[in-house]
Each structure stands twice: as structure tokens, then as C-alpha cells.
Amino acid sequence: MENIFKEEVVAKVIDRINQLSPKSTPEWGKMNVAQMLAHCNVPYEMVYTDKHPKPKGLMKLMLKLFVKKSVVSEKPYKKNSRTAPAFLIIDERDFEKERKRLIDHLKKTQELGEAHFHNKESHSFGPLTKEEWNNLFYKHLNHHLVQFRV
Image 1 (cartoon, rainbow, N blue to C red):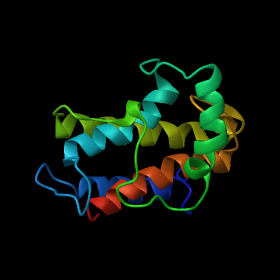
Image 2: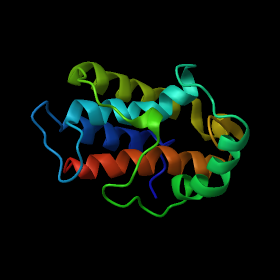
Image 3: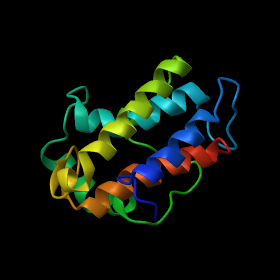
């Protein structure tokens, strides 16, 4: 798996994002391209903002036991996989705004580096290793860029 903390990997991912246009269409799924970009911003919002309430108690335990492995492993997501409610984007979004936010999040994450993230508490899964953070960030974004053929 590519390492999202490396500058050259982020540059390649940004290049792929910049190949998208407001008219890009998905190979699968219901989201348009602006919604997909907003959806891809959610993991970064969970790290850098308090926009999304943290799961507590039984819900957090269920996420750790049943969801964490599929999110932080290297195994790719299946097409049309279900997503958590916080990741559902059903309203219209501004393509340029979401594209810029995602690129800014990628740059910030790379600049902070893997040492910053190693053993950092995640929003939903408890502490994650730098490898798990990488997989969480890169795998999700790659899945959706492939969805839109870039």
C-alpha cells in the first residue's frame, strides 16, 4: 500500500484528484463527484475538527470489534460497500471547495507525518499505529479515486 505520509505519494494523489472535473462520473455508487470529495474529507474532519460526535460506550466497542479491521487493514474495500452515517453525503456540494479542502487535508497530514499519527487516538477505533492510519487514509481515498477512474 502506498504511504500517504510520503510527499511523492501525496503529489501523485493530488495529481489524480486534479484529473477530476465537475462532470466526472462514477463507475459505481450513488454519489456525484463533489459528494465523493466531501465524503473523502470526512476522515480528515474526524482528525482535525470536532464536527462529528465521537461514538461512546457500546457503539465504540462495536466499531472496534466489527469495523476497525476492515477500515485499517490493507484489504481493499468492495464496490458499493455500506458506509457509516457520518460519511453519507446526500446534499449537493461545491466541487472546487471540496477538492481544495481534500488537497489541504492531504498536505497537512503529510506535513505532520507518520510520527505524529503513530499511536494517536482515532475518532472511532482507539489508538492506531502509523500503518493503520496510513491504510485508513490511503485505502479510502484510493477506493473513491478508482471509483471515478483516476
